[in-house]
Length: 155
Image (cartoon, rainbow, N blue to C red):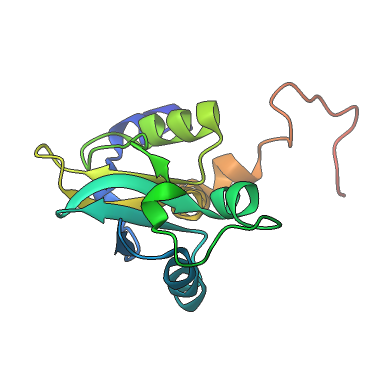
């Protein structure tokens, strides 16, 4: 099976997603950051009435909090990225890679048909999938897709 087939056939639900962390939209900035630090995550999902309403990432922190006079008591809803792009558990790994690549996302929330949050897909999970499932294909690829080597490497 080639890379293209594997990426289109494998579903997100089959990846074994890591546990996700969510905070309520009313949680203050300081508590949200402490939650991210204790979980060692680069983002947290933001919910309101058990529905996904946003995501707060390291990038949001750098752009909206670090070096500013932002009060730590402000609710995270004021600083989150609202209405983030999402994926469905039955979307393909190819769909996830394409979305992340097109928009520079490192983490995408996973929601079911009713819009309930079911998980979060970090880019590290996709990298692990590629390295473990397709080692020969991944390790044999040049660093750049159009790269041609002038001579064989090794003995």
